Length: 160
Image 1 (cartoon, one colour):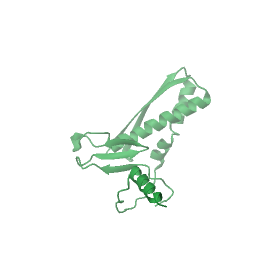
Image 2 (cartoon, one colour; image 1 turned 60 degrees about the horizontal axis):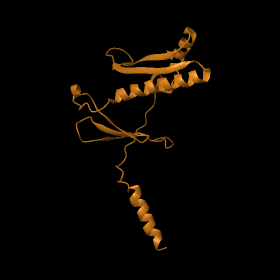
Image 3 (spheres, one colour; image 1 turned 180 degrees about the vertical axis):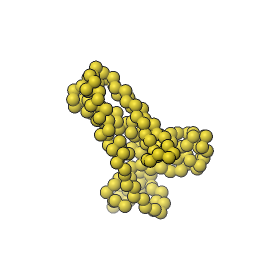
Image 4 (spheres, one colour; image 1 turned 90 degrees about the horizontal axis):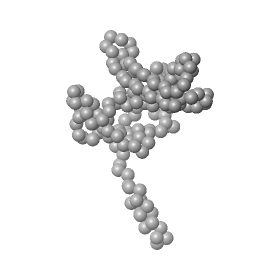
């Protein structure tokens, strides 16, 4: 596995239901699950909804940065995204986006923003493909809480 890649997202099964997973990423904790209709608890977004969220967020960020660089009068951007699997079609996964842009833009500017949307890094990853490297590792030993570690350090150097 590529050692220089940071493993930023941590998912841990909760033991509650067969799909519910607690995720930590960038200091934020959230629950992912599947709908009740497929055996989940419906306690959070599905993994595909999170992937669609990443596409929507990245698209909005990309358009905002571009509009700011151009000095265009964009007052708001909202991107809606969804995912579906289509049997008998290749590729079977389809992500759909709807981009709403507020501001006094002409048709040329709006068309350019639509082109720029396809340059968002998540869009490029989804359309260009990605590699996934996986390794199996032993469960890590529980780490000592930071406060306990600091107390141990203080104790260790007190008599030095």
